[in-house]
Structure formats: C-alpha cells, structure tokens
Image 1: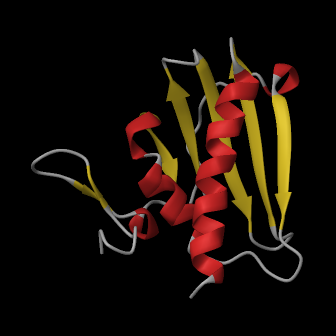
Image 2: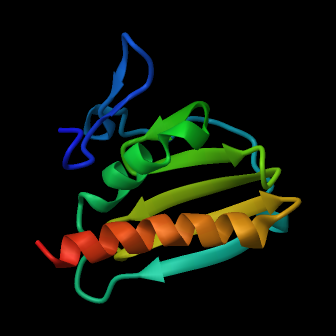
Amino acid sequence: MKKFELCSELDGNRILIPQLLEIVEPNFNFDYEASLKFIVHYNDFLPLSIIPRFIVKCHHDIKETLRWRTGVVLENPDFKSTAVVRADVESHRIYIDVVGQQPKDYLAVILSYLRIINDSTAKR
C-alpha cells in the first residue's frame, strides 16, 4: 500500500489510510475570506485516488487530525501558512485555499504534489 501511496506511517504504531477516514468534514476555523484561492478542474472526471494519495504525500503537514476522505487541512511552519485542500467529485474540482505569510509559495508546493500525482495517474 505504501508503494502505491495508499497509506503512510504516522509513527511506529499508527498507519494513515485516507480511504478509511471519516466522510464528514470536521469543524475547524479558517479565514476563507482572506485566503488565496485556486481551483484545479478535471475535464472528464476527478480520479478517486487523487485526494487519498495527496493526503499520504502531505501527511507530514496535516494540522492536528484535520483530515477526511475528500480533504485535508495542512500547516507548514517553513512558509508560516495553512491550507485547506478539498475535492468535489461531482464538479470534478479540487479547491485549494491558503492563508499565511507565504501563501503563494505554499500553494506552489501543493500544486507540485498534485502535478506529480496526476502525472503518475496518467501513466497507469
């Protein structure tokens, strides 16, 4: 499962499997009004593996335990920024909101992770 980015080891005793996360988005505070917004639109369909693989790839930045099956809240101390990344399967979109001191830089990192995942999905 690790090889296919379907799980990640959180510590010696726990493994994160995003597809087994709660469906319901948890409650959290985030300033959407002040956020840098970006939308990734997939023309035909949003592959169901994108967000779980993204959560695995970014597990080191997950804020507290703010993750659910179709999204995650990330926090990066280097960029002093926080991001909410969520998928809407019906609209074929991934919504990204970023706030903090270096939101553009953190958005670039997030988009690079998504690009890597998309490229590997296209090759399958």
